[in-house]
Image (cartoon, rainbow, N blue to C red; front, top):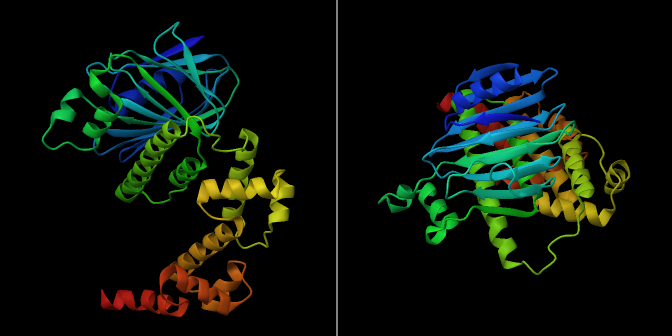
Length: 342
């Protein structure tokens, strides 16, 4: 078994250590780092970014030919880790030989160590693992600051009553977080715009993780969901299919057949992931694509209607106005006039 040690709080030093351990090359773009490697030691990608307020976001998408442990140690800090497993199974322990807990696909996890023990992340041989790790660097001083911010509030929440015991919470499965991570990976902008978009989505993920923790504590004795891991994977694949094929004729029966899931489970999953029915989500995706076409292309309204898979211009105008509080033609006119007024 191979062990890699990360004993720094900076993204730059972390990626240097990861490169030394797994090989490959690191590309830096603004505050974002991407390590890609494909060797007999490791294959996959690790990407990370340092954000404002002592927050960092790192996503591992890796496969190893042998069991690998990543040891994370942050002296003089009390970081809180918010983990989300998108694929595979992540095992965690506080130090070698200590009990392990597992995060299955789509599960959330919160990890805090008041004593500063090392955090061990265990990657199994030949098993692809996709896991996102949001780190919030807190200290005891943060909660006593007159300008207590997010770090201070999180310290008070997860280091209660001068706690000295390590804390690990494994939460329920959450498809909304999967959607937000997909959105992070789909960002095409560069530079400060990309950083700001990632920062906004990371804060949303933090909120969803904390909300999940609160709801799980409140409903410890209740059955909150009936979807299996395989069904959740099918929901994610169906959602990705809609994003890529929004201009096609998509039916619930077709999605159920293609992704091997019942209509009731499909609807349950979309309510969990998007807060909408399947039909409503398809309509939302199409309207969002239409807004992009109206804003960034020379297509006329009829061409846009056809391009997003609608056949009725009047129906499109109706739902577009419901979403943006103006008609498609008014929106198109506003985009044309904007450079003149600017």
